[in-house]
Image 1 (tube, one colour):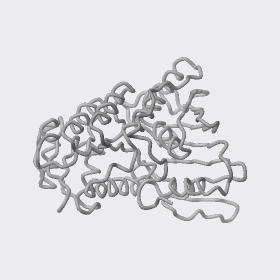
Image 2 (tube, helix red, strand yellow):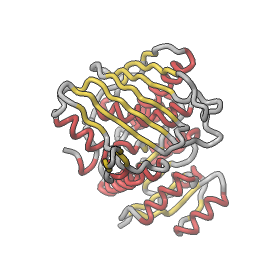
Image 3 (cartoon, helix red, strand yellow):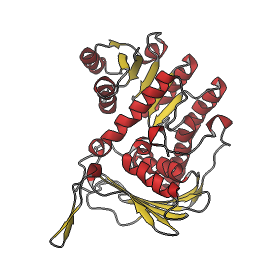
Length: 346
């Protein structure tokens, strides 16, 4: 029998996930959708044969067995808490909530429920390149890790994008990724800004984040959101015995070296670069919910931890100071392996 899912939010990412659930992922049926724009919700519902319900009614509806939250970030806390209260598995697109305090309320509610029901949409953990990089690191061939160099470059961003979004919406992917990659929490952060790009407008673009991890690994993250030439994601780990890096060719394609030049195609946007990761993410979430297993992906704790680091980074951006990370003790419910989720775990 198919898993019956309700989707809150039918904007770009909501529609994209509904497409996955109805045409890519097996064993799932979208039975209800909700959106503040009734017309948008009705259009999507008509395409997939779902009902249109208000968000709170959708979560409570007995036909809905699991919930996907894709609405704007300020509403996430309400719907995730409602799903926990209803005892339903919930996949929440990032951010889990817009403040560390709101994320902590979700963590506390889940701990009170006594079981994990929440998964957060940090898709980097499902990308083939990042999973391969983690296997190289965990395999020990490059020795103990010392540093990681990251770059997150967007060709451009929409007009409503603000300086805080460079951290809360963009760099947060690297914040979650490095916690998972190295199995360590971020203990301090500093944000540096230098010469602004002529393409940046009012944004402090580019930024450089310096993340200090428990255990001593240093990670630098370049954030450039008006790179113009494409969507370019890079990562290289320096170890005591060597280095390991993400391949530069898109989708595992070929990098050509010929006539004194090196060339490979660059993704146009995040959907092209990480489309397969989103597919894997939802496929594994659905399989786990159908099996009655706790979520194997990014947890409510991961959402809280990422939000806490992002808030500290935003403070550093304003003050130009190194900021120590302050968080509550991790509840026992979340003390699980940092190994890669799903069938690729080795």
